[in-house]
Length: 511
Image (cartoon, rainbow, N blue to C red; front, side, top):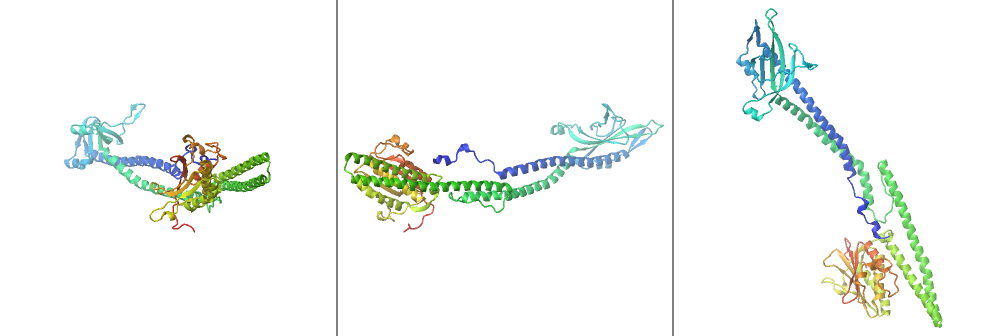
């Protein structure tokens, strides 16, 4: 299995809105609806109460005005001094407008522009007004002059109409209409003030409730946050069950499902480790025995034909042993392998020195100059190269470097040079550099990327199985690094590996 199977994909979906925000939204939405409905109801109640207060004052003013009109025979005595008129019009912002007519519609006194009263109807026909009964209604008084420019639709009014009878039976009693009006602006202002006075505490309560709901959501979802921290904070090799001291029943079910999955993964990993160990023992031992027996047989026989057959058997056993070792190394480098995640900090330069030294005897037998380039700076001369600290699986990195050196020795050819180089990158201070360079025939440019695939070989020379560079790529990528092949000048091949430096490095290399 390659690393692509474990990388996040755009098709896997993206994180949506957080659960806390969804809960807050669905809890606050009814509150906002109720708040708006409460505001509308409050405004209507406030307007109703303001109408009641204004209607009471209008009724009192109309009766007071009616008392100033005294019947005399068939006529009316209007006892309405200027002082009484000034009292009605005392407030310029909220003047009382009045009109007296008798019979109704025939102007006697007041403001002639007041609209006619609206009487109740029955079967689309007006009902005869009841005497001494107030009729309240809303109306509009047309404006004149400059006022008409400011209010072209007229001035809204709240009016009361009071029908009275004056005169006696002997002198043909008559009906008199007394109308008193007041501007609706003050009524609406009073309703708005009542609405504001009601909505301010309601808004404060909504905000307080929102805060309480948010704190409650955080408290309820805190076990989920603790569960996430347990999963995020643990190492990839830590497959211990998740621990929750107290959590809701639904979260317990989720934690139980995750623990069941972790137990299954732990069992799978243990089975894989046992298989790798058993395979290493069961395959390496017979192949090593076969190689030993063919070597002994080659030394003890002189028959040319038999020696040729034994040599082919020995070569096949050698290739089989090499293939088994490569496959086991590739299995250890797989993402699912525990060994692939078992990282520690170590000195890449020192590890490369040790591995290179181990391959020197074979290089000498093949007449190849194998060495390691020494690098240093002003503080660390070439005889004491500075350590290059990385954090990776040291055993797998040794396998990767061994595969690179093995490939170079296989394909570079006799009388060639193979150089191992470890250094800090000048233009990337957070990256360590590991290179294996040879001056052999190299690889065609079109095959530089393809040779990282499994069982792909760029040449028929040698006895490789096409897994060496695939193993290197797998190990480097598991260590968050990058590997590429570039041609070496004037000829040859350079394997260029970049690995991230450890976050914090010890002051001294281990002894």
